[in-house]
Length: 126
Image (cartoon, rainbow, N blue to C red):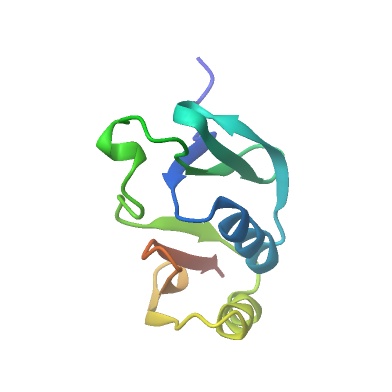
């Protein structure tokens, strides 16, 4: 049996266009798809060829499940990069504050909180 892999995660945000652009700018990702979504909302799929982050915002006035209305309802999103220092420079230039720097086996990491309070872990495996 082939090993399973994570294709995407879907996160509710305040401004999906802004969040999608931030992810593209910081991590070199691209918008794979964008369009209408559940409950008159809008979604951007941002990532690479094999995986992506779906950033969603509900539209309209009807009820939706709480998990689709609450921005930042997860522990953190982990992103692997080749050059941790370069990404940290971009994170700072974008106005975010890196924190919880750590060297650990097998790599280095830091975290930052994006505009909706979603914590993003950035890790480099040396």
